[in-house]
Length: 165
Image: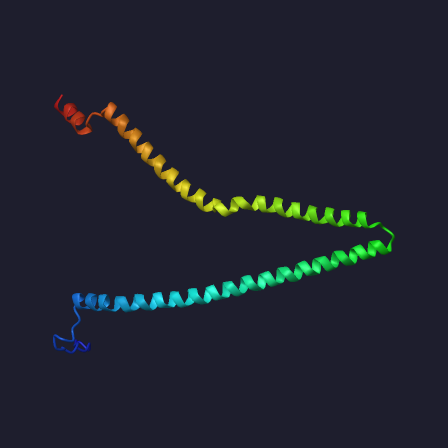
């Protein structure tokens, strides 16, 4: 049976890439690769910073516009109540009560959200892992202490005694 597989051409020794040469080439390229990645990160961070600045400015503008609309809403409502014959002091008290109630609700909601800023699930996960690791170390230490206090006889020595006796 004839082997149909072609024999690989033998190249000069310079064309054969050895492992040390490959590692050397990789190490030579590494600074360029890292520089490109750092440059990309820098450009993206600059773009993200500009976008964040625009977002804050637009958010502030939106808040001003919403506050103006809110004032216009209450001014219109107050004018409607005034047209119905309700006295100004009662209208002002009503507007103050509704706005202060809404503000109190917002403050209570913020207070309920504050604990989430501490990343409770992540801390719990990390502390659980630490507790488990600490518990395993304590368990192993107790086992070692118990073994040191009560050494177990060697089994192969017991078997020899039975065979000899």
